[in-house]
Image (tube, rainbow, N blue to C red; front, top):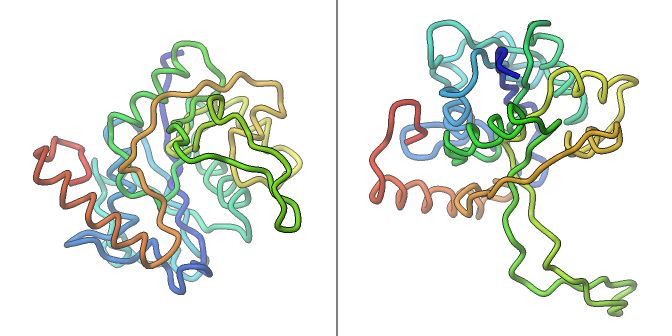
Length: 234
């Protein structure tokens, strides 16, 4: 599989738990969504940025996004759910695309290398590839405040984005407009083989205002330790 790669950056959430549109919050001189777009820019031949309905008429500068390679970034209007927003992005992705990367704007510090890793796994034959990081805490199943069992965490991972998929299978998995918080789950239900690549501890998902402070700390630490590479997020 060596055909075109397109990325869908999902930035259409309403930020209910955050209390504002977290995807447009600032981290230093950049915005959350601007950094998320940069995470996939070096790997993708084209990018679809899915935004809330009342943002789709704005320009990229108004959104805090830089077009990474000269007018290849397109906007799409998001749906009422995350799955609906992914489908809105898929509708813009060209028919000849072979691999689709789906990335949440709420994870602005995913490295370009992580995007390359999931795409490489799909090129190698997987139907989907997702980043995962080990669970270090003890995990227990609880019912009405009572512990039911302690779960073996050795086979569990915390899943991140960007995730990469066979474009053909991803389109098929979204037929019938299923609802899902994770595209990998839809691929699994469709009988696809999803593999896990090592995720990144710095790839924090912003859910609350406190998470934004954590991401800002990671961003500052990364900038001090590793100079920004072309196409990188720094």
